[in-house]
Every structure is written in structure tokens, then in C-alpha cells.
Length: 217
Ligand code: GAR
Image 1 (cartoon, rainbow, N blue to C red):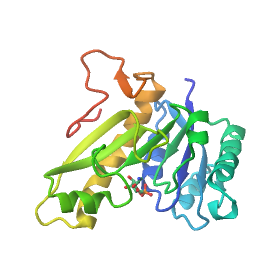
Image 2 (spheres, rainbow, N blue to C red):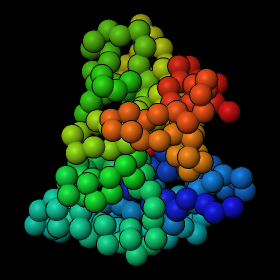
Image 3 (cartoon, rainbow, N blue to C red):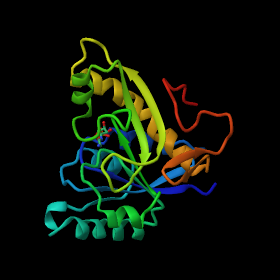
Image 4 (cartoon, helix red, strand yellow):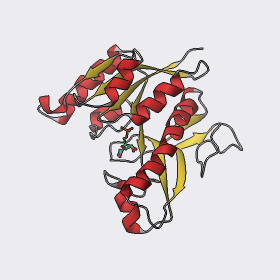
């Protein structure tokens, strides 16, 4: 099996990275991680990658004069590692239009809300403040605008009356860990195709592109 080569970009804890590492450990998973790249030296997720023998690189954004020169450095490292798909997993840097267009339809992000609701860094607090009964997570193709782009997979989770940011984040994170590997599988197997601003399901009748309380295979 020819596996899709992915590069995972992180800034911190790396629990989604870990979910991807675990998925890739299965023989029938159609992707493999060629590189983990962090913009922070102390990102805890780096240890997960190192423990499993995956190559890691740290490129600190604050060593660069502007966003695009940092992005060009990332681009060079990803290409040198033969990466075909870039997965943002808690990577807390906005990518430049130059990078997103260079990697058009080949950058994926996970965000802890049902986009387009609650973009930005405080998605859980926004959901609680808005009083919504459901929130969730979204895996999507990245566009230059923050937290925007064709939706690959979504999962909804309930927001409980007594939730705080931490309890809601934990419930959503469990869904993230199921959705991210599933979205990568869909892409790697060609089961979704990006057509303009929509991800189209290539298996008529299936619910691959949009899931609610998913029963993920
Ligand atoms: C995850 O909840 C992810 O959805 C979120 O950061 C967390 C990273 O956790 N990303 C964003 O908010 C991006 N806008 P992790 O490092 O344990 O995977």
C-alpha cells in the first residue's frame, strides 16, 4: 500500500498528534507521519513523536523577521521530508496566504467548534457564553482566513448546563481524537474531493463528509 506522507505541525500538548501516531501504527491505515514540526522548543508533543522514532524539527517563529519567511522555512523542511499533506494539530500560528496557496487543498486543520461558529483561540469559552446546546469539532481544509475552508468531518457533542471551559474542552477533545484520523483516512483513500469551497463525498449515499454524533468506523 502506498501511504500518504503527512507532516504534523504542533505548538503544544500534542494529543491530536498522538491520536494520529496511534492511527498510523495500524498496518491498514493509509497514511504515515514523515515529520513532526513545532514552532516551540518546549512543545510537549515533540516527546510523543521522538518516543516513536518519528523525525522532529523545531523552527521558532520568533527567529524570523516576518510571517512569510517563517513559512518559507517550514515549506522547505516539509518538502525535504517528502510530505504530501500538512496536518495542523494545535499549531497556534496563522499561515501566510503564500503558504496556503503553495499547499492549496493540502493543509488540514482541526478546530474545537462546529465551524463556522466560534472561530479563534477561545472556542470553548465562546460556546459557553453563547449558551449553545451543541458544540463539537471540525476537521477542515485550510484557507488563508483563520479557521475557514472546506469541511471534511464534524462531530457534535452536547454542552452541559454546568460545563466550564475545561469540561467542555475535554468532551470535545475526545471527539477530536476520533475525527482527525478519520478525516486523514478519507483524504488518503480519495473518498472526499475538494471542489471549490466544499469537500464532496465520493461515495454516494454515505455520510462521510458530515457526521453528527458520529459512529466512526
Ligand atoms: C485542540 O483542541 C485543537 O482543536 C485546538 O488546540 C488544541 C490542541 O490540542 N486548535 C485550535 O484551537 C486551532 N484554532 P493538542 O495539542 O492536545 O492536540
